[in-house]
Image 1 (cartoon, one colour):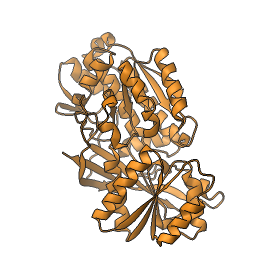
Image 2 (cartoon, helix red, strand yellow):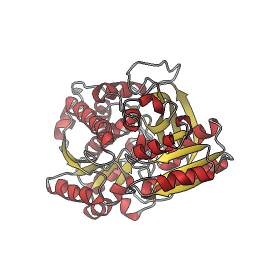
Image 3 (cartoon, helix red, strand yellow):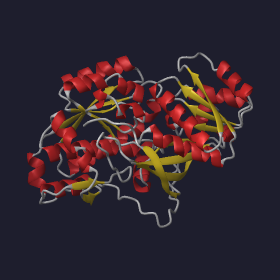
Image 4 (tube, rainbow, N blue to C red):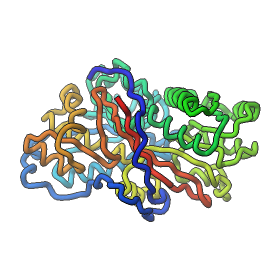
Length: 422
């Protein structure tokens, strides 16, 4: 696949209410139609031979069991597990081998080398864009396909060494408008954008600043080192700016940063967290014993559809962030192996974009495999919504949850679908 510049956001649509991320109770969504959630089922008769003859795909999982994104490991790994169970129940041949990436580029590189040595055909992960940057050259040189359900840095779209990379989450060019539009609707006039000094933080902060300017909202990017022992200088800058709203683009270090903002009398309703802070335990981590002190705080994260969110929430206690995207990575990799009849990287990546567009709609591995067995072109719409991959492997449709802390509980209050215009 040749790489070219990212698309711009052209449309925000399909806003509806969703169940609480922590409770699992259903909130009516009106006439909004959700893609059906794939469920385990026996193999269809017309696809069983096709599946039996297909190659067993060994997926190397590179996710943060440790490190500053470890709170995302449960929904990410559970999304993969649920997909694997559904694929195997339908007769698909897929096997997972796991490794820890932490949020440490060196650890991730070691893990990838080990997984490749153990026979991984493809790599799923890493969770953080900066960590994926540490492994992408190795995967390019070895011609191994990589899918991430959480890497949003636009840089992958134009990198030559991202030839074997694709993703089921939209880039930060979609994240930024979701955050900016909600911040502007809240009446913000002067926003301090506190940004982690890595690939993801730099990319998202620049795009958020740009989008806020388009909405006539002033903002300033305040970068910080994730290795900082305290954030006194960052909070001082916020105070000197006279900011009425603060956007925090951080991972686990954001807990300390948010706590310090509250101590400096920044109202929680004036604080907005990026996707790296989508943690159902965040209120109690920021204010142990008094989680309601964070009431009004808003955070944004990639989401699945209503049905899938309920399914994964029951498995991991409410943490839904990026779970649907990792489910879809797993299914897309398995379908690519079937469609290509191969486990080789060049063969797999050649068929990936076409599996998500232009063919007959299908929403589960079993259904899609049956269509492939018939020789049909397919258009997979998955747990995270109607995927539409472009020629560089970026999905042009994304789904985001907007969550708010209410009475000490992080609740999803709405879902926004985003379509990236050509």
